[in-house]
Length: 397
Image 1: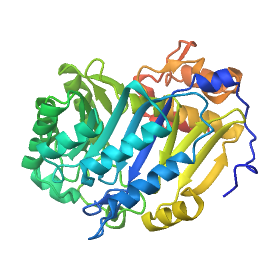
Image 2: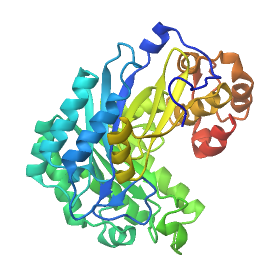
Image 3: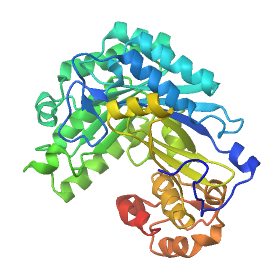
C-alpha cells in the first residue's frame, strides 16, 4: 500500500470545477451474516456468538473519517449500508452509524439512504427502528418465493417469511427493493413466471432480477449444481422477466434493475455513471476523483484485521492506487454499458478526464456491429448489445 504522499498518478488531472460536478455517495459494509450462502462471493462471514456492534460502528466511523480533506465541498447524495446482512444491526447502532457519517460528510436534504435486509432477520418492529434511524429505502434479499429454491440456495428464510418481510416493509417504507434470482437449479419458466407475479404483488417500487452466476471460490463452484438451466432457457427466462415487468409498469433501466417511475436507485445509478463513492467497513471498495486523478481504495476483508488496523493506524486500507489512464475506458464502459438508456457521450470526458477520441474508434466499430445505437451523442447498448454485454464491455480492454 502506498501512502497518500507517495501515491503515483499516471491518469489525467481534473479541475476543481470538474471534481465538484461529480456526485458523491457513501458505501458502508457490514460483514456478518447468520451463515454464508453457497452462491455468495461477497465479503461476508458467519456472525460470532458475541458481536460487539458498537466497537464495529466506532471503527467504521473512524475509517470513514480517513477520507476527509479529499472530497472538496461535495455533499452526500446517497448512502448504502450493505453486507453481509446489515439488518442484523440494532436500530440504535445503525442510527449512530448514519448520524456519525452525516457529521463527517453532510447528507443532502433528499439523500437516499438504503439498508440491505434479509427475511428471517427482521420484523415490523425492527423496520420501524431502521426508519427512525434514518433509513428511507430498503433492499430486501428475497431471492425466491419458493421454499425448495430457497433451500437449494442455502437461505435461512422461508417463502412465508419473504412475503411477511415485504408486507412489513410496505407499511413503513414507501420505497423498497426486492432482490430475486432466476436461472436457479431445476427452475422452469412456469416457476419463474410465478416468482415475477409474487414479486410484483408485494407493492415493491424497485425489483432487481438477476441471473444466478457461479462465482469462483464459492461453495457452488466447488460442487456445481447439475440441473442448472441451459443457455437457451436462460435467455427465455431473461426475456420473460423483461416483458412481464414491463407489463406491470416497471422501467427496465439497468441490466438487472427495474423501477416504478421515479424510483430508480440513485446509489446504483451513481456507480453505473462512474460517480464517486467513499467506502468504510471490512472489504469495502471506494473510488474518488481528485485534482491529481482517480483513486481506488480497498479495505481489509477480515473484520478483526480491519478493526485492529483502524485502531492502530486510523484506517482499514489494504490497497490504494491511482487509476492509470489506460484502465479508464474499460472501467467507465464496464459501468455505463449496463444502462439500457445509455449516457451522453460527453460524460466520458467529464468522468474520466480523457478526450472522447480515445474511445471513438471502438465506439464506431461497435455501432457498425449493431451492439451500440448509431446516435453518436449517446453511448447506449442495443438489445443485441445487452444480450452480449460481456463482449461489449471487453471491447474496451
